[in-house]
Image: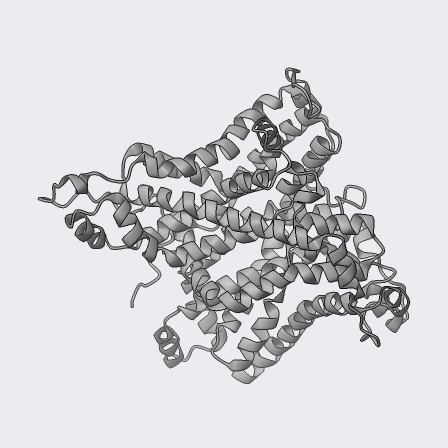
Length: 272
Length: 318
């Protein structure tokens, strides 16, 4: 029985491996293929002469600046989301007043609001706040739309803190600030990592808010940089692929350094 | 406790624990108040709640994005009733969400459970499976567009090897939507696989040992141990998928631009183009309100269909 089940499973795994690996191979190989060889040799053969020219072209078009903008937007969004959501989750878990509970249901309702549905008024509000065409204009709404999920995940991980721990700290005369710093903050770390990953990915990947709320190339983020590159140099696929590889390097570095935290955080946040 | 159960257990949440008798110090009664909620509340109110009010108002105006909106009464809503793109857009949007869920959930579940095993080759292969996580949404959409190019991409290379004409997958109105589904699966399956992998590793091994003693085959173990143990994770992952499906529009914008024709023009894309390409912000706002209704409807549907209410303890019998 066991032996028979293994064959289809192995076939399925090899198929999925090909589905994942072929595009990755295509991206990496094309980024190293001289631009004219791409047009004459086709997409799949192993390149005979490798070149880094494509990377040079991508960098000259300002990709290091786009990378910096994206990094700032991502870090600021994570900081703002966590900084706003954790105190809110603390209040929701520890304060049972009707008003605070109503707050929770508003955030739950927020899970169903699609960000693009409010893009027109967000554009209006951002221009009225004189924030149009700045990185702040991207960070504020991105963080706002990360809040519902952040608060749901963090309230659920704070509920797992036993009541006795709060009580013993409070009996020692600790105020809310102290309880927050000494108890809530350390014990909610897995939840914070989960929320950080999800909101960070949202900010890093986001296209709509940067597209509508910024304009100049000075504040261009990576996704728009890639899109713009494709729009202006449509036939330069090797250059585009080099830019794609460059845009993946920060994630690769983060993944290599933070792999263990990432897995533990996701397991804690979305586990059972 | 999981995200899923947190979202779902609103009805059955632990009852309020009033302060234990005798503990009456001032510090104890001073619970964290509205001040702690304020930063999140303000941010959310300004950029999510206020915009819903504003979008409702704008849907009653004519506005080109500059200057001041002009009152237009119900004109936009009358246009909306006769816009033939809307039934089409809703159909495509729902189809895309449902088919994507049907494709991604079993794939991620099986891959996640498989990769949770302790064997070394599983760890190595999983590392390859997670590679798409490193690429941003834009990188994935634009790479796939280049990869599927009928003249220079992978279809051309394969077709010339097989001596058949290269298919133009993104240019075929009947297939483009399913190509979008495939690209979205390529992007999102690794993330959900990661979630299932973490959850599957936490299933107590005694459960499998007991099932094996009872003579359960591996397939049987999967159905009667793994699946029930992963209920909450399935719900959490599905909720994330549905919420995430609203960002599918960004992939479509870059991959097909809604085309060919209107084959992949989901409702959000129709709205975006009306507002920011056609500069008809008033009508775009009416479409946006419709989008809020569709989005809320989708989430309610998912909550109902996933049987949130039936869920009870997953540790029974342990």
